[in-house]
Every structure is written in C-alpha cells, then in structure tokens.
Length: 126
Image 1: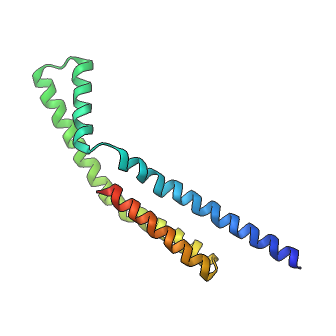
Image 2: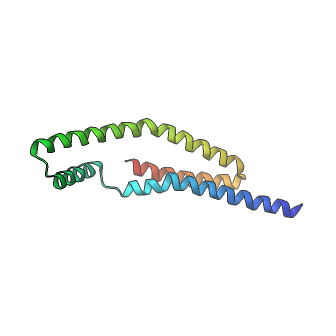
Image 3: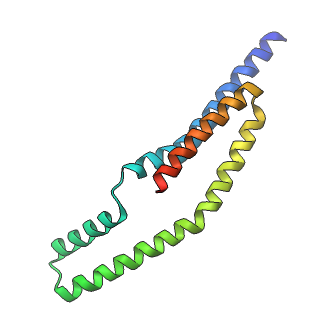
C-alpha cells in the first residue's frame, strides 16, 4: 500500500510539473519573446521600408501602403485587447484547477511562481 501512495505522489508531482511547464511555455515564454521585440512603431517602419525597397513603390503607392499597414496595426491591437480577457480567464481557470491538486506548501510555491509570471506578462504588455 505504501508503494502505491509513493507512486501516486510521484505521478501527481510530475503531472503538476508538466502542466505548469506547459502553461509557462504558453504564457511566459511568449512574453519573454514579446519583451525583446522592437516597439510597434519600429516594426511598422521596417515593414514599410521593406515593401518600399522590394517593390520599388511610387510615392503614392508608398503613402497608401503606409495607411493600410497603420490600419492593420490598429485592428490587431483591438483584437489583442478583445481576446486578452478570455485568455486570462482560461489561464486562471487552469491555474485554479492545478492549485486544487497541490498541498498547502505546494500552493504557496505555485502562487509565487504565478506572481512572477504575471510580472513578466505585465512588463511585456507595456
């Protein structure tokens, strides 16, 4: 009977680790990537320059392309704002489900890990 409990404990710990690792990969790793990305204005400028250079745009075409790309950036920002609350709710739900599996000591450590992840997320969103 003791061996069974030990095996179950190991499976739960590894399972929780795998789930948390997956959440971290989905949630935190992209934020690190975003934090290293250049500002949106820089991205827009680079896109415009690349299209202009590669396609040899006329001044009128360049103006129109710049307007289209600016519109696209505004639309994408709006989509991110709309989707972000749903993503956060889904992640929060998963975290609560994981937390329910943990011992009080593990819950405290899990909460610390989550708090660190949110700080990373908040920095990346700025």
